[in-house]
Structure formats: structure tokens, C-alpha cells
Image 1 (cartoon, rainbow over the protein chains, first blue to last red):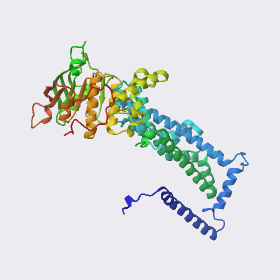
Image 2: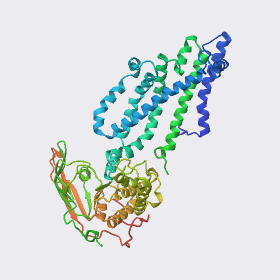
Image 3: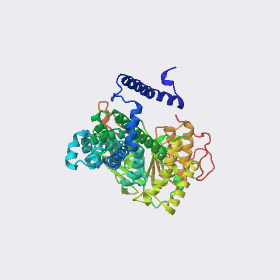
Image 4: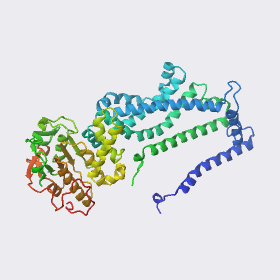
Length: 271
Length: 278
């Protein structure tokens, strides 16, 4: 039988999907055990026990200097920056993308500007942001927004502009104004796409968050990783990276589920 | 029983739509040349012609989607605004309905736009009244049982019924159909023919339909326009445009098959009686 025709059921898919992950973990454990057999003080590939010990100190014991649970404070700070950045970028993408997509004069006026901003590497703007906005929270959130918003705007604008002309014409023959077309025809059809765009922007958003935290911060997941790097503290770095991955996956799943629940018509709610 | 004769008691003696010396050109390509046309209220005009003869261009300028390069178009004696409006309804071959709205919401949309300029949504008793009106309209096109389904859940024929209901709720002066049944099975198409004829009678519509199916054009229309080029230059085929080469008035009973008059009943999914299209 051809491979293109091999369709698997749910349990088979879960099994196959878990296989490479389990394999990777196994390879890591074997290598870590080997290194520890050679050198019990090895820091490069810590064993799970060491990670648990290091992390429980960060998770359940208050820091002596600040009196805070470091891990949770880091998580909260990073999520706050990420949430603000994603929120502002999403709102911008929706409003600007909608207007650009529906109204040809606005597209002609601001389309080139958005394209221009989108091609600038956002990290190159980081010095400008730090100079203009200081080293505080604003600059970090701004980096995320500048990093992901232009791409999201262009995506939504393109999606809205690609709505069938027939629909726009039909709406006009039903008496709809530009505003009404925007809020009743274009906006609802842009929403599933917007959630999709946010999903795709999650990756870059994390990149910009960690970058900003690595360069100037005193709290945050990215800050902690780059701080403990000085002590080769892989027993902290690896769990932190895993935690970031878990958070990203949870957000992705939440967005997918929201889209399916809220916009059944966009997910082949058919016969 | 001829709807043309009886249904228009007529305070308007003149044509409902009048095209005078209309030209459509794209660059140096002439699509339509010197189209003169008067369309009487209550008529069902079929437009046929070969591909590229400007059938759809003609429909688009009447719709207001495009502007003629030269010439004058008048609706009810007033110059036509170069923009689509609620006085001209339209049903396209595809994409005429909004995929994110249920059949009922698709139909209510036209009423909401008119009554709520800012929010384009109705609430309370206004909403109930609009829904009642839309429900009636959906029943008239045979969609009473599918009101709460999304277009993706409806078959092609049902989507076109929905598109018609959506247009008719605005009571347009003219209903424009752009190959509305072109993508449907022959059996469904025959049902749709019956539906559109009964709606045309019941709502006293003026219909202009573009089709590439000549039998459909003659079965439904009270008047058939054939668009084609009068002249042809083999060295520069794009320099001559098409115009109405035949204009055939059919004085006929609009209903070809013997069928008792049933007003605004949902048409049954009966076996096709008209014809299978060529």
C-alpha cells in the first residue's frame, strides 16, 4: 500500500507522535548518565534529579534577597509582557488590517508604509527603543509589538482583500455602507484568520520577548536563563526552556480550540 | 395570466431601465459598443451570447459595479449612480451569500443595514419583526427547514435559493441574475426555473438574467437579447465590440408547463419537468 494512503487512528497517531520525543529523552538520559559516570560533578548534562532539586529551590523557596518565589515571578513577568505585546499587536492587526483590506484609498495610502516597516528586522530597532523608551517594560512590550504587528497587519489585510468581490457587491445591493461592510462582512470573516495569525506570531513573539529580557531586565524567564548561563546552570536552563515550550503549546491549543468553538462555520461545520 | 400584461397597472409608462449609446472599453479593447436598450417593468429579459461577448460586462454596468466608458443609463428616468445600491438586487453564480451567517441571518442582513446604520444589528421588537419577514421570505424560496444552517451546510441549489431570498427581501426594482443556475445539476436547475418564475409572478419582479444556456433563456424569458459583434476585423478583433444583434420579444405564457397557480408555496423537490440543459 502506498504511504500516502496510510491513514492512522487516534491512538496510533498519539503513539507514533510520542515515539521521537521519548527517543530524544532516552538519548539525553543515556548521554547524561555516561557523562556523570566519567565525572560526577558534570554540569553540562544534568540528571533529572539535579533539575528537580534546582527547580524546587526556585519554585517553592523564597529568594533570600527579594523574598519572592523566583520561578513564579519570572513566569508572571514574562507572561505579562508577552500578553501585552500580543494583545496590542492583535488589536492593531485587526483594526489596521481591516481598514487596509476593505478601503482601497487607505490601502493606497498606508500599504507601502506597513510593508516598509515589516521588512525592517525588529531587533535592529531595539537600540532605538531602549534609547527612546528607556530600559523598562515599555521597550520590551514595544519590541514584541513592532516585531509581530506588521506581519499580522499584512496577513489580515491580504485575507480581507481576498474576500470574493461578489460578497462585497452583494452587501452593497443589500444597502450596506462601507462601515457596515467592514463590521458585518469583513470583521467576522477576519476573526478566524486573526486567531490563526496570532498562533503563527506566538513563535516570533517569544523570540522578541527572550531577546529583550536577555539584554535588559531584572526579572523574567529569558532574563533568568541568560543570568544562570554564567554559572553553567543547565539544571535551571533546561527546565526553563521546557516550561517556555509548554506555555507556548498551551497558548497554541487554546487559540485553536477558541477558533473552533467560536467560529464553527470556518472549520467545515458541514453536512 | 400573463404577468407582463396584468401585474403592472402602471403609473410608470416608460421603461424601468434605459441604456442609451452605452460603450464599455478596457484600454483599446472594445467590449460593448452602442448598446441601446429599453427594458419594460415586469419583463424577464434573458441575455445570451458567446463567451467574451460582454454579457457579464453589461450586467456589471447595470449593477453599478462598473461604469460605462460612454453613454447613459437611466433607472426609472433618473441617471444611475455609478455604484451598487439596494434598488438593484443580484444573484451571482457563486459566493453570493455570507459564509459566516446562518440562512436566517443572511436574509435579515439587508433589513439590518437599512434600519441600523451604525451597528447594522437589530434588537428587541425590531429584530423580531425583521426575523419574521425573513422567515416568510425563506419559506417562499423553500428554505423554511434550513433557516439556522450555515451556507456550507446547504447544497448548491439551496445556496442559490438563499441568495435569491436575500436579494428579494430588499424589494429591488430590478433583479439581476448572473448565470445563477450554471453550477447546478439539471434536475435542481429545473426546480430553480419553477421557483424563479413563480417568484417573478408573485413579487412582480423585473428580471435580467445572463445565461449561456439558450434553452433556459427561451424557457424563462419574455424577451431574449443575443449579444455578439456586428462587425469583425480579423487583424484587430478587439477593436469592435458586441451589441444586441437579436432582440426577440416572446409573447408567451410565462409558465410553460400546466400547473395550478400556487402562490408563494415552497416549490416541491419534484422531478424535473422543464428540460435538461444542453
